[in-house]
Amino acid sequence: MSLPGANDGTASGRTGGGLSELLHAWRYFIWLLSLVLVVGLFYAEENWRGQWAWNRYKRAMAARGEPLELSAFVPPKVPDDQNFAMTPILAPLFNFVAGSSPGSSPLNSISPFASGYDTASSGLKATNAVRCSSWLKGRTDLPAWYAAFLNSTNKAAKQKGGVAAAQFTVQEAATGVLAQLAEAEPVFEELRAASKLPSSRFNIHYDDEDPAEIMLPHLSVVKRLTQVLALRACAELALGQTNQAFEDTELLLYLTDACKDEPFIISQLVRMAQLALTLQPVAEGMNQWSEPQLRSLQARIARYDFCADTRRALAAERFWSSAIVGYVSRSQNKLNMLESLSGSQPSGSDLGALLMSIAPSGWFALEQLNCSRMADECFMPMIDLASRRIGPRLGHMADERIAELSNRSAAGLYFHHLFFCRLLLPSGSRTAQKAAFAQTAADCALIACALERYRRKHGQYPELLSALQPQFIQKVPHDIINGEPLKYHRTETGQYALYSVGWNERDDGGAVGVLKFEEGNSVQEGDWVWRLP
Image (tube, rainbow, N blue to C red; front, side, top):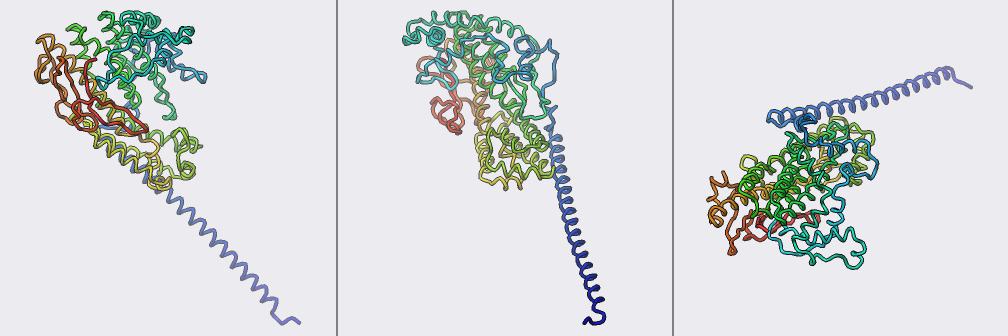
């Protein structure tokens, strides 16, 4: 039997339960709303904090005269009729990039051009001859080159062991090499005429949306042109064709500066390689150049300033790194972007891509800030333009700081806004080493021209470099490594040795060292020595 009021109690209980459930539902909603608000506030705060810090850094850099905008680094456009790079042979290079078929080569735009050079070059046998100089390989082995050309075109002779270099005199080989390179003459004539124009600006697509995909097909072309032209100049010198060799050497010096204003480290590194090739005929012709030719070479070489050019390219790295980070922040597939930037799938890239996909825009701004700041703190001090020095110790410190990033986890790099620092920043000391090596080469070649002029007037080389001033050189360059005078002494054979202490900052008595890298590490022993071949 039911008790009176039992139904009312049941109804009241249900009403109380419904109210409780409703309150619980509202509480969950309030919690969810609070979480959304907290996340929203976090994203808003991070976006504001990142953009504020990044903009403040850019203002500070601009106040120092070092802006981070593309316009500050890109050379201004010039009219085609004043532009060396728009001569008909070179102009199609960047049209090729825009609509090329896979596997094509930018060299196709100037084909045919010294078609047998590459095959002959690959067929040259390496020798273990003792180097007389850090930059020069002794006199160009023209008989070996001519034999390599013949073997590359005569399969029957090659099958029988090949044509031997020993069967040619230097003059015969020089004549044969020039004949092999004759097909390049129209190319060089056009380039020589174009070199009289006031400017050189290749049509690089600086405004590409993805900065990491900007193509530089012209670099391989100008280097190849330099290789072939340097060989031709040396062959001309061997035949006593000094005026022709001088014209080619002038063009070589021009080609070495054709990419001078480009805001890329790789462009400067190619120029350094071009200079080393160019100095071969400069040195081989030292006893043949006339006094006016020596003065002209000296004045032209004095204009090389790899310290300033490399420092400017390093400054541009701050822009390129921040531009790449900005592009990745807008990318829909961040994992693919990370793989394309590193050339493979970097360690922790999956986690990094996942975290970046949910990161606020302010996180990318802080990554831009740290990339630029680390480049500024690590790279820029290595090259001191005021004292004209490049410091090995600062280079080592920069590499150590960047190497520390490799020991951090992807999550650690992410939360400290250092992910792209590890991914994008290059080896600072390697770049600084190559710049110092190239500038020392230019300085030694400059002094060599002055020494030769002194010898012709006085019958022997001077006892001290200071004797060259001011008649033969306005000011003798100092050692770019330590700021002290370059080492110099006359030899018993009537020649001389001129050298820098090199990257190890130690005088090794003129023991020839070269700049090379093995397994990622630089070989630093020996001095950087100039001796005539």
